[in-house]
Length: 191
Image (cartoon, rainbow, N blue to C red; front, side):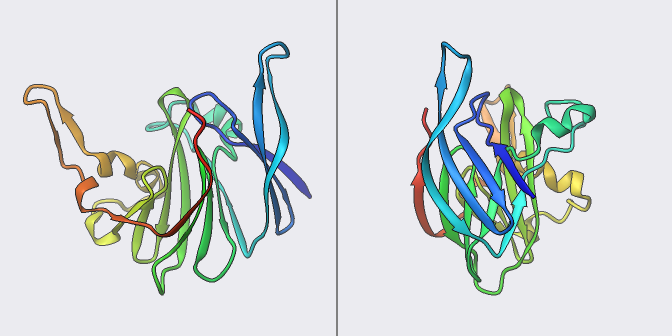
């Protein structure tokens, strides 16, 4: 069965992804103000995939939508496996990258936050990959995340919390994160 998904990015829909079995076609969209819709005309890439993970946002308590609205956010971002260690992230931008040797994908989350922004996370067997930042951290740094709901919201742990009194960020893991390997940008973010 052929399925189409429009990728979310801050209320924009920059890419349309068609999944036909293991074949994935990515088309770039442009907003037509007159018609008040996106028109997808520029084919960017076609991949034959080993695995495909469709981003989903489950709803409260962390998502910026209700549980009944969750269906509207299926396909807000997508992860593809194109070879043993090579993957493609389709979201605010599109890029290929390599997982660490011996790493396996356990789960892909794509929580929708404020302003229709997905916060996609790849939970691997050894590391946690933060797709917006193109970085990863060992899973050992997240001992308090047990349930899928908690993992779906791992960006809040990664970014830490802002202390408005002292004007500093507390508990952030950003500085200890490592850059993903083998990154090749296919399409940059539009804005």
